[in-house]
Image 1 (tube, rainbow, N blue to C red):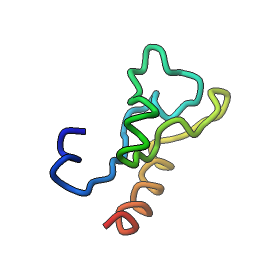
Image 2: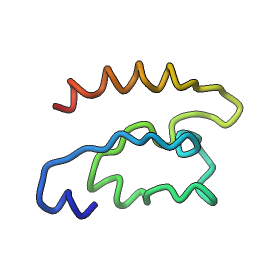
Image 3: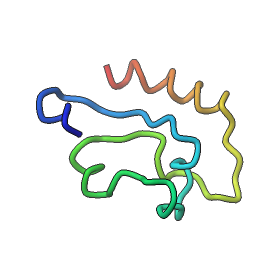
Amino acid sequence: MLLSEFFPIEVISSDSRQIFKYMDIGTDKISLTDRQKVLHYQIDFLDPSETYTAAQWKKETLRLVPEIL
C-alpha cells in the first residue's frame, strides 16, 4: 500500500488462502477499504467448497499481467 502512494500499481495476490470468500479471519486479507484504493486480484473470489490449483492461478496471472501493464 505504501508503494501505491508513489506509483500507480495493481496487486496480484499469491496467497493460497486469500482466494476464498468468507475466510477473512486467519488469512489476514487486505481490507475492502484498501482494495478500493489499490486494485487487488486473486482475492476473495472463490467459494471454499471449490478447488483452485496452482496451474489455474498461473494461467489467470499470465492473463492478468499484460492487462495490468
